[in-house]
Amino acid sequence: MSTPRRDHPRRSGKSRPAAPVPLRETLLLVALALRMILPVLAILIGTVVFAYALLVLLFR
Image (cartoon, rainbow, N blue to C red; front, side, top):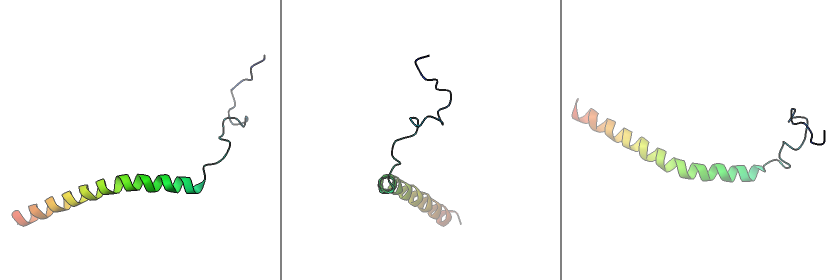
């Protein structure tokens, strides 16, 4: 058998990435994702609160 068996991916070190992802890079990615998501969330929450306030004012 010339090709190694791939039954145990944990035992061979090739399945793991060579270097762990640095913390700064993950923080930058998280910050970028938050910058994309937070305005959308803010708009949605503002719309819901505004509609709820209108309903309360109109139908009390």
